[in-house]
Image 1 (cartoon, helix red, strand yellow):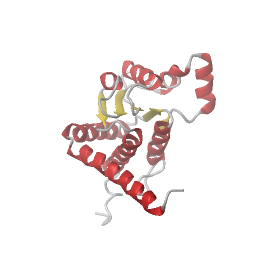
Image 2 (cartoon, rainbow, N blue to C red):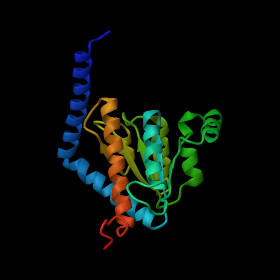
Image 3 (cartoon, rainbow, N blue to C red):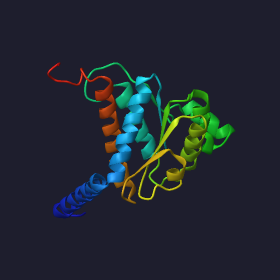
Length: 205
């Protein structure tokens, strides 16, 4: 069994690695501009009665659910619910589509059923190459939804498919996912505060 000092060293190393990626994220003007623009698009879409779809597999599916929960529940303060849906959560739907049409179609088929022009679809893939996410975003784009990719360094194929692609400057899956949820929190916060500005003012002014 490893000694305590070795475990503590490794804990510190992981935290330092996470901080280093976030520092690169902060210094990347292209990423900052993309997060800002996407936040504005989501604000406008939700304010006009449209909804947000989130697509992802595995850890990215968990991130999709997490972000959707921030919208439907709340992020920082009580306010009316906002419309957001993670497309991985309906197991009957996912398994039926996967069985009948193929796993590549599990998101695109749901977008066909539920998406409307003006909605926003965010595809989350650390590699940018998850085929079902690519199919979902491609269909969303054809249906005139706003499309966004959350990826890692380089963006993969998703970068050329989505209207906007936010590429975390790392090729390590855990570090990318940590930044994806940070970006999701930033978008949630900006949307909440923009749509309900008076409720976010602690002085009530």
